[in-house]
View 1 (cartoon, helix red, strand yellow):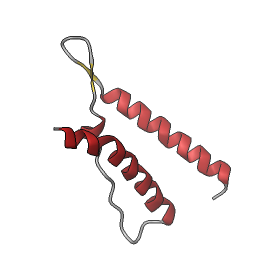
View 2 (cartoon, one colour):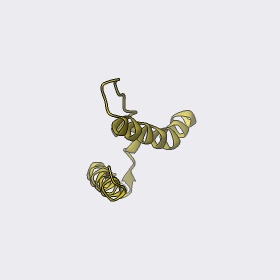
View 3 (cartoon, one colour):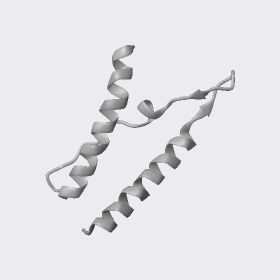
Length: 76
């Protein structure tokens, strides 16, 4: 895959994720936002049949999830 296609795919994935996350946010009774990012998503698993690009994308997602959500879970 060329660099420009990879960049386009990453931008498209980011746009989809952003739209999905913003659509999941709900308003609380006091007018604040409820953060659902760590409860709506979880680490992604892959199999040996997946492509290298799919496995790499899953690992990137999991690293971001770990950085954001493991700290929050540990605080509870």
